[in-house]
Image (cartoon, rainbow, N blue to C red; front, side):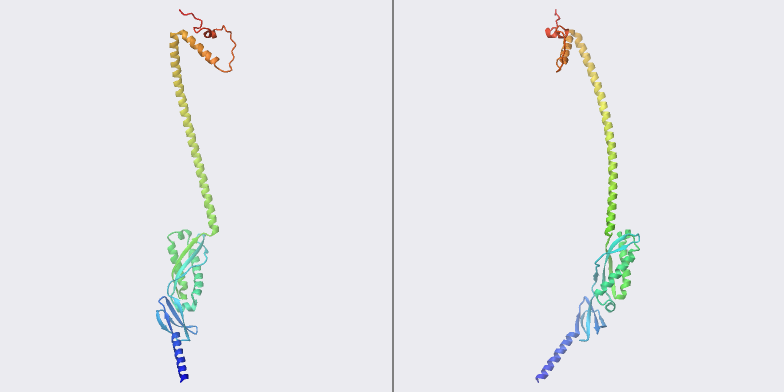
Length: 293
């Protein structure tokens, strides 16, 4: 009786384990492939509770969602105008046919290796027909579309559908960038020298015009000053003449005082004259030795 009970429990455990092994769940974000001894038997793309033969079959799951492929390193490509660019392109794809996908690349790791090679070749071919100007302008979207279409044709046999391919980076190689920088620097330095030379030439013209204007203004001012001075001297002489004509004695006194100031007033002046000279007559007598009536 006890042995029968144990056998019953064992059979029940085996049935439960078999039922557990036979059932599996496919999520909404997944699709599955049922394999029997490594050979694909069924493709399941609808979500829900599914069954397989226990212990004999196994389920392999694949993503239904869009997957991304981002390359690790940029590749150098040569354009139609012989320009060199460092380019990397990222792609978005999904597994369209799990059976074909399994038969060709097995898993996502194998798919990434194949896709990277295919995308790299397509990028080189498409960009090899384009110029740098087309990549840097609005034609870039059309170029991305051309790469996507070409890659799609190549990966259709892998059970993969390419959703999008885009150029993430398109830069000059380091050596080319340095050469361009040096050329731009030389060009800017040349323009700076031309601007400085032009500025110096304009400065010299302005200085020459200013000097010419200054010379003319100074000459006109001197001319006007000489005219005013001549008119002043003429008026002074006239006034002196009128004054001295009215009083000759005052004229003689004024002339002697001027002579004293100019000769005796200067330091270091030595004169040898007789004390009786008429030059000193106003020293002896304020009237100059002339008797007044």
